[in-house]
Length: 171
View 1 (cartoon, helix red, strand yellow):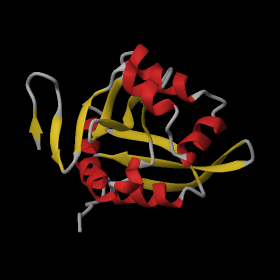
View 2 (cartoon, rainbow, N blue to C red; view 1 turned 180 degrees about the horizontal axis):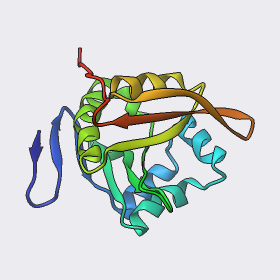
View 3 (cartoon, rainbow, N blue to C red; view 1 turned 135 degrees about the vertical axis):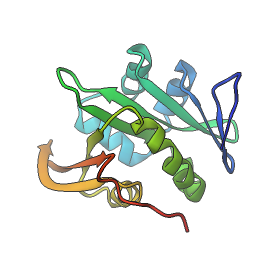
């Protein structure tokens, strides 16, 4: 993994590089999100453009995975209101499926960076987003059994604690 001193870029994941997010990344991705990501935004009664711009406006930790000069995913952490909890999130385009192995390798490195200053990071995921749940497990997240219902859709809590994280491997 190589970090550029000038741009804050992180390289070393095949065609993927990680850069700090900017407004143009949010604008680009807001109309290209995967169906599963659009569903998660809909479940929260939100708008894709607003959801992607909010962390930038609020100065939350936010990065973009770029693949061949095209934003493929924005992700980061957001401090929960009135709590010490930190939410982790990611929203992306279909390029994630096209570059699945490189995206997973990048995710393994980046998740540790996102969690560096936090004992626990967490969020919720629709119970039927099996590919996302599989990816989360491989990144060392624990998937809870307790369900939250949003718009008649069961949501599962997922969390990753520094002391509890499992060891993930790349094949």
